[in-house]
Length: 240
View 1 (cartoon, one colour):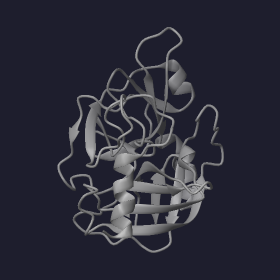
View 2 (cartoon, helix red, strand yellow):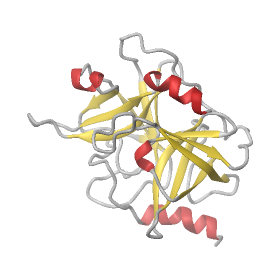
View 3 (cartoon, helix red, strand yellow):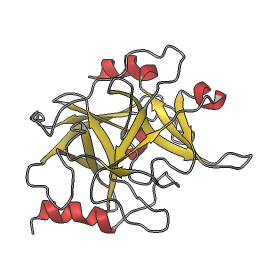
View 4 (spheres, helix red, strand yellow):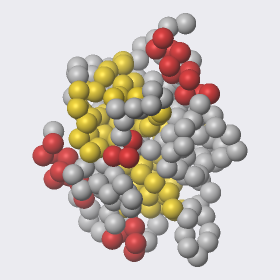
């Protein structure tokens, strides 16, 4: 077994503590390579451990993820569907990470990060960039989908060996709006390992970045938060 495949298989067996405290229920396996912008981010931590986040390809040079997915170094895996079949994937190291200059690690406001690749991604049927939503006109985007290799059951520590996806409905929440988040709520949503993946809505554009989950003080299901891409566009394009 190759070292690269072994590293991918480790993610099925291990999961370090991350931000999320939810699970994807009601989700299903994505059609293989139907989301060619998806990135599995291997995070090499200072203590030698490997952790994982999601991400998505913006162009041949840059990947976007969440700022809280920081690490000592990174490898992005492109063109992946199943960790058991990684023959045609591209593994590219990261030259430099650019977390949002106003990221707040306590509140997770501006939880966005750009990763500049050391070599250019090679586009093909399984590796393609995703366009970003342009403006926030004050209305919530419709028909949103999340995808990732994150944990599928809150009762175990196993990440999914295949790319999963789920539809979510955004809620109108004042606190979310003030902090520049889109939000969804309920028993279905992103889970550990899905952080940094895209919130894809309407015309197939990335509207948000999977960020964090909070439990309402009044009780009820967790609220899942996605950093608004339209609100970060000026910063994003200044860094690219």
